[in-house]
Length: 79
Image (cartoon, rainbow, N blue to C red):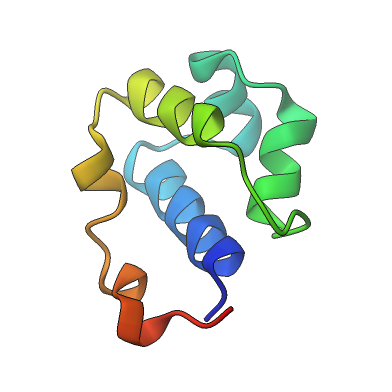
């Protein structure tokens, strides 16, 4: 799995866990809805860490929580 796909899956999971739509996540985090849509549709090869930080801050989780999914293990990622 590519890193951009893993991030997309994780953001979708977090939206489900927090009972949010992408638009709801945008409102909660202050990140533009269009940016979050690009992230969940894996349109960008590189995602700025400030957006992951914003998602974590808005949801009250830390980076460890965000990256704790097994698909972030190096053995599961390809570039």
